[in-house]
Image (cartoon, rainbow, N blue to C red):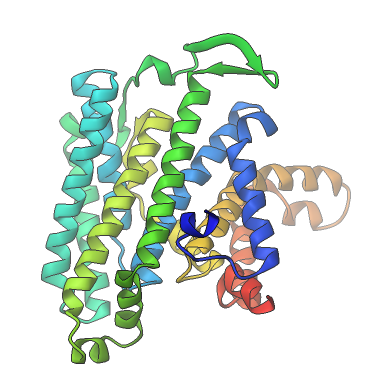
Length: 352
């Protein structure tokens, strides 16, 4: 059964398997293991970014396509849900309409970009996606009457997914069974299903062909594979998954704006997570997203504690001041690339 769920793609390393099990258990029982708003929000973001990073790895790691438009698809999914909830009211039907509309628009745009741009060299494709994503971000900012501009959109979600809703007055392990808990498990199980679908895709004959195209596109073309068709299909699938991740974020935070979905900063974060976890392996997305989101959320707090502990010493308090967290995050990234050139998953698999 495990083999079927994982599509035959086992971790092939005991430390890696233990790490993945630990992350999975922590995410599955996060509301009970780590009570509080901030830990729950962090766990939900990890789930969402696992889908987002895995969808980008489907493109970069398995197909060899560098794209800078991934946050655009992420944003389209989020705006689809936001606009549907704003216009149709707070209902599950509105969420469904928003998810379907956002995914359809993302797939159509990805198809157009793929058919018109994937015949050119990789660097030009990357530039095209960067230009399209930048143009889309500007468009969203300027269409403020629809998108809320730079301020974004706030909206209501179905009451069953809000803290005001109580499923029962009973507590489970001292945790209240309310709408926020239901919303978390909606995000968790949706992310789990999407991840398993992507795992199935990359371990199918289609995924094997993508890897052949990535390794040597000319040879794949010579033996009869239509390289552009495979690359375009991968682009569309990746965009659809990114859009669904955006929809989950929109449901979870009840706000959608350019800063949370369309910014280049998020695109860079996705690249970092892929590299840290390991390209060309879906499990890399799990580890990369978990480590990065945890560092992004808690590194400042840790540095504040370190600053207080080293107060009175020369130089050290300045080095570990919380406002320098980006410097240390960058240092951690450089060290991880140096010591784990194949990503953490690659290193653990090599060690067996």
